[in-house]
Image (spheres, rainbow, N blue to C red):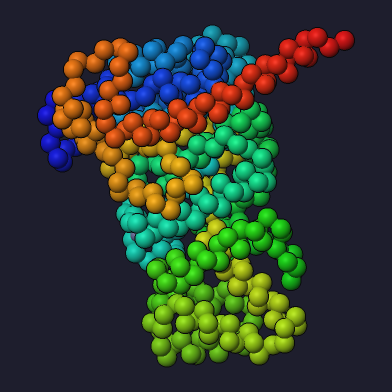
Length: 416
Ligand SMILES: [Zn+2]
């Protein structure tokens, strides 16, 4: 099939993508955590969005081949993954009311650039560029470290959303088993910057003039460099009148705020880095370790958090039955594939270089692919291979945690 450079995502393109490129087996292995189909897959909810915008919940499949067959017959524009229920979602009407409930689910996080609109200066709305992507890069670093160090989870899959955000899926057995209450507790603990309509509010992370909790202190140390580079230099967040007014509101010392307000009003476009130095100079009028100096030192740490700490869409993480777009789906507006991202390479990840479905189909054409036979994967001939390999490598780790669980179960059977 000839694929022109620019084309709307027609149903034909989507069908060709699912038929020849979508890695159903890898997605099955990832969700199922085993090669033989288990409840982790068969009792799992999928939700399809069709071309006419119809939204079909409670789809479920017996295995990867069954999933592929259903996807090809419905040809959704995208699909989402939900929890593992007490029964197969497609059989839910046969179950006694109240007995069909969500049980297991990866712990997920969703970070979207929209939440950075009040502070980024290069783009707005749906647009992103490599510069503001820096906020997402900072978020990935902080969350990846916090999840591994504070919660001890190991099986983290980061997935680019295809447009302006990133998702995290955590597949550790202990993460799958978290109750909604536990998910809420973790999410609240990690929601430092108020979200949505509240985003203008200050971070509220310490008691009085006390030091930050140790885990946030670690994050601040990690974020100070990013703050200088991204917020002060690249984004120049305080380089406009609106920008510095927002900053002044975060300065608790009224005499310092008044002095800075006067200075900056006379030179509104004074670069952010110079304005930051102005604050530090002002602080020095107070003795080291004096209360007003401590209050200001704390305020600067809080400002670093406010401008760089991950802004989570908390509602996504709090409940097991929240649906989230599946990896390797196509973003309907950009045509880009939702590909896995290696957090250790996040600095060099460029969302603009992620392949589009049109590009992948062109690559297939150029490879002169023979008609697909069942054993051969067409994605191996395209730039999608890199990303499928990443998921397969991740899956090997996810599946390796299973035998330990089984063994533990066997020991339990022999108990007295
Ligand atoms: Zn931008």
